[in-house]
Image (tube, rainbow over all chains, first blue to last red):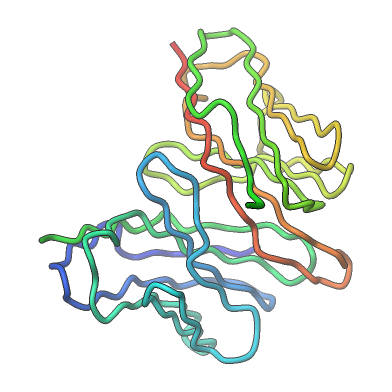
Length: 114
Length: 118
């Protein structure tokens, strides 16, 4: 089975400052990795994903994440955050055996301070 | 726009009174999922349908049931809600065209239904 650890439950950061949200995973098989964002009282929206190929993946709103197999990490970064980035961020992993199940971390609450 | 729709967005029920949550999708995805997300916790998979095949997670209580009458709709039935069942319930869909070969696709989530149990 897979598991995901998000070490930081809350991350406050000033507007226009850089941010890194950490994610580590554990799995005995090859995995796919995802970051989802959840705004208050809303469902989860896919931010970016790693399936194969380039280990650096980017989203349309300036976030990026790098898959590091040796460190079993998939940290999310943004060089300059906006107020609108305030949300809960979930890292998730699924295996490649066809089970099609996502295992989520406990989430990181990003608060951008004006 | 193709999307995942959940109704209602907010549901209030009484302790022990059966309740049904609805999910529909216009994505024509063959896999549909139900997750439970309690306050400040990660979403937890309850079960999923792969086409018409129902797949229950081992630790999902018997109190939770699901129906999928067609590709577009999936229902979550809670037979006797308890106070501990108050949560956000998330529906998701994905395409998995080659299940045994391990070809899986991204899950797309609906906005969720927040269930309150009085």
